[in-house]
Image (cartoon, rainbow, N blue to C red):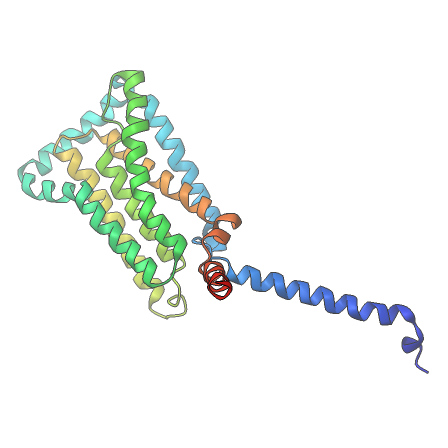
Length: 262
């Protein structure tokens, strides 16, 4: 008789190995049922660095917004914008209006619908809440805070905050767009879309400065606010508990169970 057959430990180890493999399989299926993260592993650390820098810029601007510190730089940039762009008021107004409420609603609605069509529940939540959250925090938290400190209620810029919130949302949604990562032309197309969005955001910042709606530091602070709010929301949505809640597979299973039991 084979010694391995005679050893009782080998007979006990078999069921244990099968149970362990079954447990791993269940965990793997459970993980696959969770919503896919918005940020791939390779870009999580760079995104965290960008979030930290944006938060630092926003906080530093709260101090530097006082005329004693910000006025020299603001004056130079504002004078340049006025001198070179003052004759294009109509064009500047059209660009600045891209950060207005109704235009923002249209853009985020398009992103929201695209996420629904591609079955990205967490992406739909980010598209629907990221930019509105940035706008509300800018108007109801950041501006009143600065106004309370310095009697100055234009920092940060609401136009620029909304614009860069949409830019950041677009970048995050394109970072792991399903079904396109394997396409050969996708990296170049993604880069072109993100670059275009960034240019539009910068154009809005320049437009509100050239029109005299905001100072240069207001535009910089608005960009930092929009980026910080959306990236914070992205990391929250990428938490395991958030991905579990937003898993379409889990909701489908629950609905199936309720339907069958009813």
